[in-house]
Length: 298
Image (cartoon, rainbow, N blue to C red; front, side, top):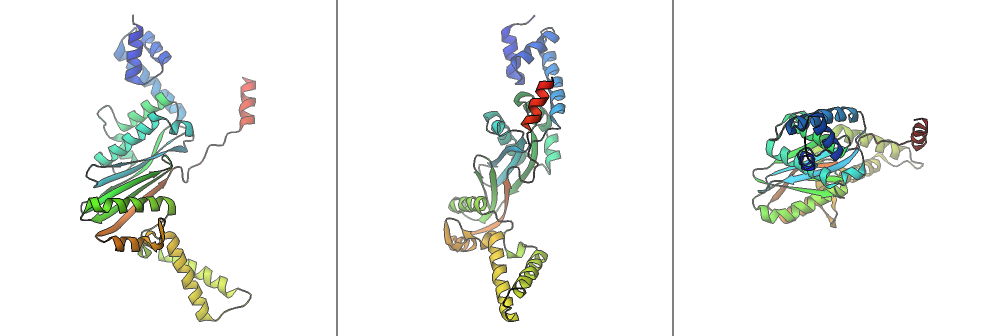
């Protein structure tokens, strides 16, 4: 036999619902270990049913080591915005980010296979699915380690956007405020590369060709040398849209991010990552008419 305290204890251990814990103890004649196994088996079955659902909501979380040399941003997806805002889900994503920082997995598959001290990361996700009741997917992460400098992270809108920036510097304490400002700028301005040198030159030439054709097809054609000046002017504008160091600094638009770095002195931006939660993922579309009809037929 078992008592209400046993049900509570099993609930604390498993994170499963009260009725599920009671049923597990009934099925296992009050044996706590067998009941835990029973719940895990049921959790796996529940997770399999949820695997086909669309998980396009979620959170981007970050972690920076105490010495500011290692940083991570990680995106974990769930099915609804409601779950994404819960403390349990946020704690799970924070745990994932910290594990990536500490264990340095090569990819998501390697992360899922890693031992947490209480099973693998995959098993941790399975337990979370059973407790939260939605499909949960670790989508991606980025990890940086800088020996001769620091990293900084910024998370915007409660986890909708996450940024990780790498900075070379000698004085970490002095560089931190500027590094954080740059991370915030990246969140707002959406650069796709660090500098002009990082832009795909095929893309630039393609852009030049289109701009040249546009100028030549204007109602009043201009001389070739004027057209080339116009094209180069528009290419410079393109660089300011996509290159971090060329962009006007959001807090001081009269200077570029590159000029901010020069003015600060003693720092260099090495690279960055920017995740926007759910970008590129299929969103679930609910058809409430079909849902109601389905309920009526049951």
